[in-house]
Amino acid sequence: MAAAAESPGPAAGPRGAAEADGDGMGLTDLPGELLELILCCDVLGAADIGRVSCTCRRLREACQPRGKVWRERFRLRWPSLLKYYSHTDSVSWLEEYKARHNAGLEAQRIVASFSKRFFSEHVPCDGFSDIETLGCPSHFFEDELMCILNMEGRKGLTWKYYAKKILYFLRQQNILKNLKEYLQRPTDRQSFLEGAVLIDQYCNPLSDICLKGVQAQVDDITDKVRKVLRTKNPRHPSLASKAGEVLVSEVELQRQVLDAMNCVLYEQLKYKGNELDYYNSLNSYIHQVLIRRTGIPISLSVLYLTIARQLGVRLEPVNFPSHFLLRWCQGKEGSTDIFDYTYIDAFGKGKQLTVKECEYLIGHHVTEEFYGVVTSKEVLQRMVGNLLNLGKRESTDQSYQLLRDSLDLYLAMYPDNVQHLMLQARLYFHLGIWPEKVLDILQHIQALDPSQHGAVGYLVQHTLEHIERRKEEVGPEVKHRSDEKHKEVCFSIGLIMKHKRYGYNCVIYGWDPACMMGHEWIRNMNVHSLPHGPHQPFYNVLVEDGSCRYAAQENLEYNSEPREIPHPDIGRYFSEFTGIHYLANTELEIRYPEDLELTRATVQKIYSSGKE
Image (cartoon, rainbow, N blue to C red; front, side, top):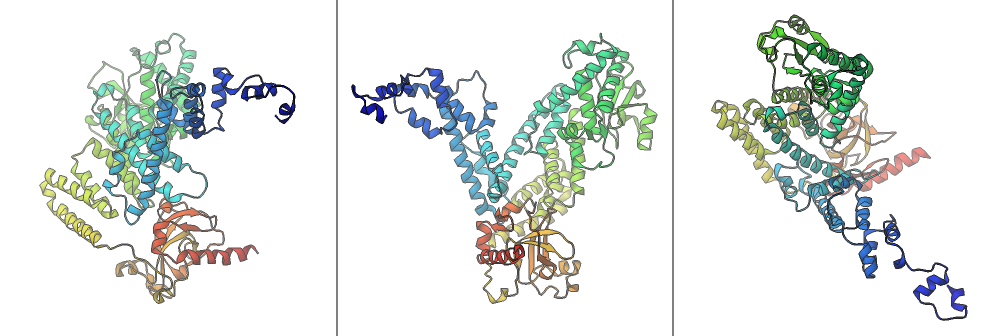
């Protein structure tokens, strides 16, 4: 430019400057497609595009709200959201960008408020009320929550903790709506596979599980079966039809399909019943069955039945005791004679059984009613019942999440089941959560079955006492290390410790100058056998196995190799893991205002000297 200005000739304006550089045209003279390509560059932000569009009419037209530039800006910022739009939709991408941006700000505001509102208790039932009345599309809100959960590094732990809880709630509410809609359909429109997916989704709401994806995997297996079938019988009717369009009527042709299915599932793909880890909940989730290629009788039966029906063979589910089966009609369709059917054990590699062999399978005789066909709702009931039993067995999960989820599912199908309503009320009472909901459940039980008044009365009384105690609470208890009564407390919040006796790794999230548990707990835990007994500091710790424990000071020592503690409640108390210790979040720091300084001094002394 300096050389051009020094050259003889007329003064050069903007266009002349471009010509002097040898370009011959300005930005606004470029063809529309090239101009859009430049404006779609990922180095430009939304604010840049906004400023560019204000410079002249040509650039304003290039940056029109429904145009490619704003669509690309939306895609670059939130790529996962494009699945909600069709290419044929007429969309104002500028307005969508603003809506998503505002939804993100609202999500951040709500997540940030949760720690202050609910630090001292579980998020109550009405804690999500402001989320249910959002003025923005729910998928925008969920997308921001996922962005928070996917933040890299070890910071933002408290945000991630509450974002996870909110997302869990939102998705489960949506899945429950879908389940209730599914149950209201005519039975011939209730796909067994869709029902299994809904259960899977509800128990794993943060996983990317969808019917379309599961169906695609089943279709892939079905195609493999067709290839095997084609080598055996190139003219088989199942080869010419689309999924489920033609019903194969001849028994021999049906047999060919089942033989091909057994070949693919059990010989080629190595599906099998999980005999070694039968009581693992993953065996009940259809997406895990497809990934791990193993399951329990009912989950493998749903897969087997779905593939058979797509190939024109109508198998039916049989709610056989202790071992779910399928039945295949060998006689007149719709026959009520149990001997007109062959029974298929999907858990046992598709083995075909007689009535007598079915009894050998479980070791005792059963009446004819257990050989009858069941509805899709009854299949779901048994799947949920299995999860309920597993939830009761779990001892490491102190939140009983599986039991809570399976109870929700069961009561969505059978809302007036007194036995399960009572179990739900007792569970919430045991966990000390949602006392108002406990009272609602108990009132419902009393209306359904007055004979339960004894158990209901007991729970009502103690729940009301819990509510009154909560009303009497006056702010958080603040513990100053400088207080004389706390002089024996050696360790501080956020330190990674090791239990001397049991060897577990843990992090401290609270302490007392002496054991604050009742006499029964002290006796059961044999605390008096310790050299200092209950008259020593005790610490609340989060343990790597997911449990929360109360440990005596003499049983704890500094961890020589501190590492992250994979506990589900870590974000409730801490905002960051530094690589050596945890930083208390705002709410925990209010309760232990002098601990941070000691934690940093301890880390400096213990770990820096160790490195030297």
